[in-house]
Amino acid sequence: MKVERSISLVVLLACASIAGGARAYSTPDVFIQPPGEGGGGGRWFTGSPAEGYSCTVCHSSASGQREFPLYVTGLPLEGYTLAGAREVVLSWPQFAQRWTELKPDPMAPLLPGAPVPSMSMLAELVAESGKASGTIEVRGGTATPLERCENTRPDLKPRLGLSLYQVRAGVAPFLIKPDGNGTLRCEARHLGQRCIIALASCGAREARFIWTPPMTQEGAIWFSAGFVTSEERSGTPERDSVYEISVPMVQAGGGTARYQETLRGTCSIANVGAQSSTRYAGHACSTWLVIGLFALAVRRMRKEHR
Image (cartoon, rainbow, N blue to C red; front, side):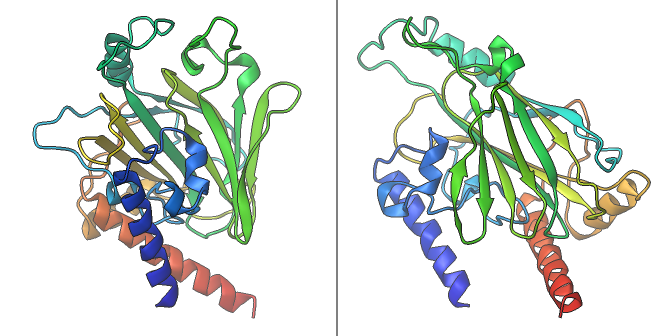
């Protein structure tokens, strides 16, 4: 109970910090900072089984407001293969077009009173066992122009819009640095290890990463993401488009259809399509269902190790 109260306090402080003129999480490193400084206090709000909370804890939209979806392709929705690498592509064409309309010339100085678009995306893959969810690689050396940030000055070098953070229990999250080939690599092999995919608000049009599932059987693995956009940065969590995705994947031959049917019997969820954005209609219900399953799995694992 004390832990739940502490987490709730962090969430409330984080939301209050945003409303008080914080940076509205337009840069991923803000999530590491204390709530009193406009940060997330170490919480990432992906809505995954490991996180629990999602972006809607703080951000909200207005009635009739335009929504900007996030599209995901490449996930093995038919069933993943142990250690079988897949390229996953995240894109947001509607907001990318709107960004261009609001900022037709990224090199031009902003006019007084002109709207400043903003976006943020956080995602992760989490195993229902609570242990290994595999390896994520972002290959910056072969990135396309769509994956790179806009250059706001001629002397700036192109940089990736996507970054990776390693999160482990009892250790401060840290930003993963690229190797000599420009590749970012994060592994989640043990209980409590997480790899957070973060997108900065910099004008990138899409993001790509290679996901290699674990070599061990870990049951269902969830891909969860939160995508927050604003046509005009205001420093408050209101009037933001919030789009959330939570997709379960089981090992090939493990009965993906039966697994999803079980969820449908508990919560109302939308059909999953590999070439379209995937979203749960009953997101809050499914989130808490997964949290319950996750807790049971952790307790079972602890009993086995006693």
